[in-house]
Image 1 (cartoon, helix red, strand yellow):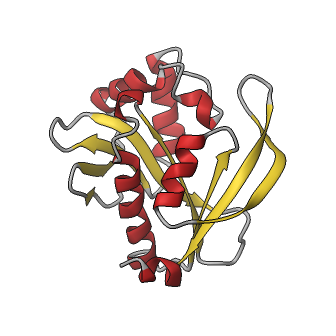
Image 2 (cartoon, rainbow, N blue to C red):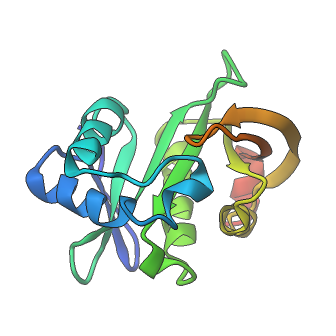
Length: 182
């Protein structure tokens, strides 16, 4: 089981396959405005959300449910996963999503900064990467606020759920760049 991380307004806790965690994921993942920005289809059933928790979140050592500290409710997800572009390097890629009602409040920047610190301090990473859709402006703003450097755009890097091929914008932050922000 992974580590729980606490920030000013959030608790990042390891996912469980409890009915509550699955229901709270479904509550925001069914929203047609959430998943498509990241390239995944809105969840159609609670069973689909359960499958995502069991087959993705629970299999990743560093995957967290983002909880609003005031209510305990899950409002998003964030993880550090394999960086396939940097084989043999102490690197991970960060990925995240957030309930629409929480957009524009700084929650994802707060969560991402905490996970970046965890990656550099506790996982001894030398670099953390992010790739985001060229159309996902909100995600791009998060990584820029976290101090990532834009590396470039690769065209037609992945096919999303509706068959559309999307470009990806790549960003990264080195440990020494992050240390300068402290």
